[in-house]
Image 1 (cartoon, rainbow, N blue to C red):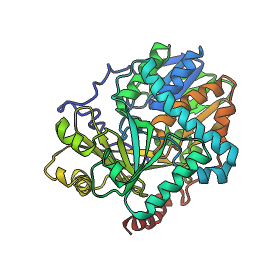
Image 2: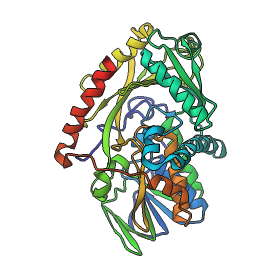
Image 3: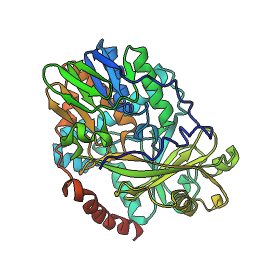
Image 4: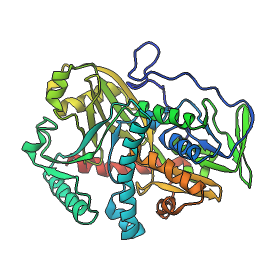
Length: 433
C-alpha cells in the first residue's frame, strides 16, 4: 500500500488559511536534468538532512532528493519528544545482539540526545527546545516496571540522570489524578520538530549540500556508479543513502517488507494562556505513559497543549479524530473540558517487527536507515552522522546497528496489516485491564 498524508497541514505547518507555528522556507526547486555528485540522499527528514550535513562537512558533494518538502513526513509532524534508549528495550536488544553491543546501542542513544542539543547550539536552530521528559505510571504494575527500569539503567548502563518520582513529586511536572508516579530524565526533552528539521536542512545547505524538493525517486540502478532517476532528472553518484523510511515503497521492496507505516495522531488546543497551561504542566516537561497504546503530551511555546496518542495499523485515519483525541485529553485533564481543539493531524511512523532500528547495506555503496519505531526524534540525527562515517570508510559504529537481526512482517503485501491489527487487539485489552 502506498502511504500518503491527507494533507501537509498541522499545528507545525498549517494550510494557507490558518497561521502556523513554523514559517515555511522558500520552496526549493525540483531536480531538472542530469547531475553528477558523490552521494545521493533519499529523504528530507531528520535522518536524510543529518546525513547530508555530515557528509558535506567531510567534503563530499551531496544531493538530497525529497518527494515533497523538507520535514513533510514524520520528522516534521511528530510529538517532538527526544527520549533516551531505543523502542525495542534493552532486554530485547541484549537477547538479540549480546550485552556488549546492547550497551553500545544504549550509549549511542544518549549520544543522539547530546547531538540534538549540539546541532541546535552550533547552527542556532530556533526550535523551542526544553529539557526534561517523564514516563508516567497509570497502574500499580507500571510502578514496578519503572522501579526495575531505573535499577537497570543505574546498575547496568551507568545512566544515573534518571530517577523515580512518587505521586507527590510527580505533581511538580504533571497535575493529573490519573498518574501514580514517574521516571524523569533531564537529558531528554522536547522541541518543535519541523523547525528542527528545517534547521538541520539549512545547516546542510550551508555546508554545501544541494536539496531538491518535489523530486520523488522512482528507481535506481546500482553498480560502481549508481543512477538515481526522478520524474525530471537523473543523478549519478558513487554512494546512495536511503532514508525513505515508511515511504521507501517500490524503490527498495526488500526494505519495505521489514517495516510497516503505522498511523499516529496529535491535537493542539487553542492557546490556553501561560497560567492555565502551567497549572497542568508546571515544569514544562514532556510526558508519556508506558501503556502499549500510549498517550503523550507537552506544552507548546505559545501555551497550547499538544496531545498525542492512538495508533492505526489499517493506514486509515480514525473518524472524528479531533473529538476522539479531545476525549482522551479530558480523561487526563478534566479542567480542559471547555478547551477547543485548533488542530488535529496524523502521520505515519515506521516500525519494525522487533521495534529496533534497521540499518545496513543493499550493496557495498547503498546504505539505509529505517525503523526507528517512535524513538527517532534524536536517533535519526545520529543515524545521519553514522552513515556519513560509514560512507567515509569508518563503519564500526554503523555496523553495531546493522548487526541487529530483522524479519519481514508476516502476511505479505495483502495480509500484513490485518494480521498485525488482530495481534494488537491483545495489547489494547491489556492496557484497558
